[in-house]
Length: 271
Image (cartoon, rainbow, N blue to C red; front, top):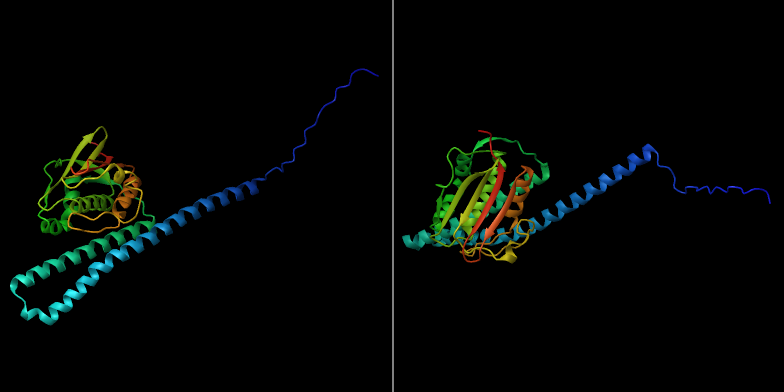
């Protein structure tokens, strides 16, 4: 046998080399799958939300309709006190209808149009006052007092004004819902490093640990308020989406039976 011969093993690749065009197509397909999953998630959220809002609207609309019919037929026979009581109940129903309708329209608008925030320097106290203006009558009916003394008059935040107002209004409406008649709601602000922390604090019924778990991530039937107010629970979910869009954070602190504190942190304007 002649001298040792080196035997070289040649490994033949069975994988077909991917061309640039094929790689581009693969990436496009991957992007389409991601977009389809996001679209499916949005549609599922929208369908669930429509079902819940439709259910919640049916009650007050039906009640208001029956009360109007009753007043048309028997208005002259009612005492002033009965008229006032009836009008108060009717006002409550219309407030529920109004709030649910506004929330649904705003949610649908941002979901469908994928609106990006327009960040500007905003006076925080002015934004809070605008945000809660439409809630003052509802708070008055429950004899709930808003206290803004803890908000710095000079505090300025970098945010989208429309998004910020929706967030503050939803958190304040939530506080009214779960605060007992005669209670208090405090809206405060403080600067923490480069951010402004805006807190909506109530002395209401609070939240359990279980309720706080994934509070901002779910849409579903929420528990009744202190006056048996109903809701879909999507307001907090919506707030979280808007806060995320502006690069902020939102958190909740609560002890059941001792109120709740919702805090939104957003960039502070440079002094």
